Image (cartoon, rainbow, N blue to C red; front, side):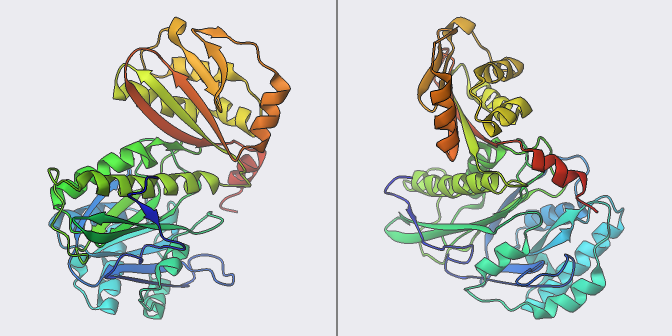
Length: 407
């Protein structure tokens, strides 16, 4: 992160000016102290709102409704719940989603067309509308409500994940905030699980959509926990313009600064997503592919390696089994020339010009054991394209946890 972007300590999705949020416990999840499962995020004024969504061909009706609402151009907030996905329940899913939006809109005094809806949890179960009806009045919105909102969207997450940063655009101090949930069903080409991004910057709508897509493609869409993608994945970016800067467009001098700040937030949220993967995961890893023939090749190679179950297992065992990285590379769609390949594990060369380099295995094992983020760098020597993907270790506990998730 460069000097252009500064992290706000304990920042949340309501750190940008003009945003409020709140949450409550409605009963969709098993009760425990401080647990929440229903929340609302809202801009006090109009917003430019854009989103990216699941590519699953069986999307939740909550996603379908939100895409429609966002496309109409009036959305300035969202109601979110955790515990039940509202997916694969037939048209009742749309009826319930519309009612949930209407309940939230009435509670905060806006039109239903001004809210999106995000739901997450078990698939194949209808939303418990009686609980939602009784829980909605318990929500109180405030500028300090970002932390509660981040907690309300959690399912198997072990902790809430939030961040906020500041930067300067046209001489104005601008703030960006974000929160994310997700610790399973995370795989490339998804928007991720649920992610909410806010800013008090003024953004042109077309520019905002492009900037969001670019940031997501380079961060959240380069993450893989388990090779599965959810029916409910949604990322929403809200920009209310309260900072008073001239609206940023693709040709604005400050566009690159905003994009840097947005990418910085998404990068940190991606890493937190990996660190909070289901079960006790201690280590995440990054895969940087350099010298690819094209951006598509670089992304394909990095994502394929980061998604490999065998690479994930090797990281879990602190095993420098570099052959698994090379095999995964060969399984990608990227153009490769074995005689040009260079491979490094945390800057230690393991392979050069397609040939293994002798190394002290015990030293590499010890190094990997001490790292909270193992890095693999693959240099293809064919061009100038570069991409980074993130993965997490695959543990025995992950299998045990998911074998009994609904029971």
